[in-house]
Image (cartoon, rainbow, N blue to C red):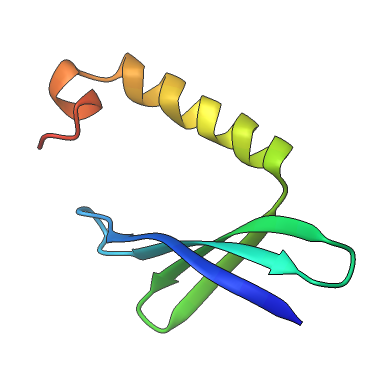
Length: 77
């Protein structure tokens, strides 16, 4: 059995993909994973990743965003 906790849900402004992030806690094994669901029209891509992978991925995303223009890094169009 698993327990799912919603963390965030948003739509990418370019491409219109729906992105949802959830914490998935598994009773058996006592493991928690980050689930990233990306919906593009009728197609879904789902990643279940551990904390170390999430940290590395998040760090790479932040580094990339910080190298972009100041407006883009602040989340402004």
